[in-house]
Length: 373
Image (cartoon, rainbow, N blue to C red; front, top):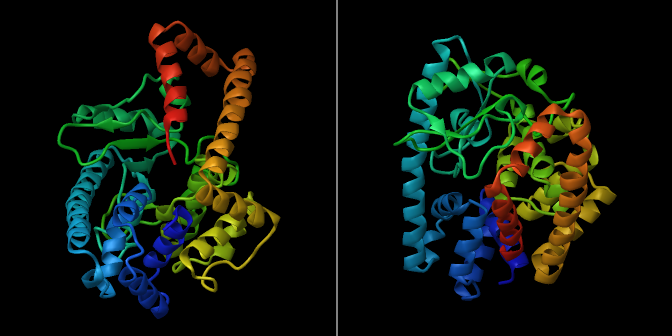
């Protein structure tokens, strides 16, 4: 199977609950011996959906058709994820307990929030990277200090040349024996959005039934944040890329809250419509998600399919985008900001005066061009 075929095949695996015909289609492909299981496994691992794929196969009686070795591997990944998510929930309880003693009530985000809010039918369904939560600006540094007093410390893969108060979130915190590292957010997005900020979500945040003393976003705001995180924060729309984990979350959230209502609160409407359309196509649920379409949809779907279908297009296009962003936003943009932004000015001086930065910067570029699809 090609990457494009794998993408849409995996999408149907995620929505086996929606269409009985998907089960027979999947079994037919398995029986025809047309699936490279190593490639399928690597693909699903990249999209962080191996655990939910196992659950879908299990609940629809597909596991018995799989090669025994692959079935055992899926089960192992799922079991490991159940154990890790159990520990993550314990860590979330610990964090909440530490903060509420000082009357700080965190708003958990993304996967951590979905686990707390029981978006999934099974604790092992979602693979999490970290624990994200939002606090008011006034509690930003105090929250970090309280956690550091409890044994957490900064975890940094590379040097941070910005002041902590200029970042979207505090440098990742971890402690020995913890299940996941923590990101304390002062902003929901990479830069303050007037239409989606703490004040906006604070009006509709809700306390999850599973834990007192903390909050999660309303379902409508979870949809908006899902779009922002996938398509704006990670430049998914620009690059023509989506994560199946993100659109699976979107699919589950759409069962709780109407996508059209959420769309009414999104300023980047054309990009959101395109994202919803790709989710609809990827999951094979043509009548289940927002049915709108536009030129941005056509362009986004075309870029996405070309990325999947042609490694030459993927490498060429991502290189053009990468170099353009590094040149105009990175080098030229920060040079201009140097004039009027104290935080950017300080960051640039810190970087340019650190001999280690030059080597790390060159290696960063090398790593990008070495990275495969």
